[in-house]
Image (cartoon, rainbow, N blue to C red; front, top):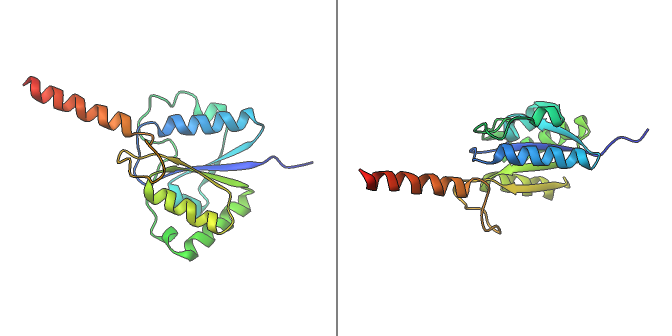
Length: 159
């Protein structure tokens, strides 16, 4: 029996509106293409710790209206060091992950790049209210953040 190609998905750094929609799209697209998906809780820290769970269509049902990210997120000092990156890769290998999808901001993309330099297949999905990710016009969460600011300014003007 041949094992299915397995992708891990994580959200890292600060959360941004639309991260749950991105997670849902990743899971549904993977399932449509007969891939397995492993959700990684708590960003790169969870990757190092092996905080994994399988994801299917039911695990992403009804998440679009929820704030934050269902995978939770954190920043990881350990992952910034080569030893932490090696630990993360070891956990990915133990779980049978063939690739990783990272949803996050500039620091998250830097982490994804570091893994790619070590041979990990990585896809980065920019997600940041700051819109500070090189090479992209707009990140997930930027439009919502800007509209929230505009609404607040409009309300201030009204008073």
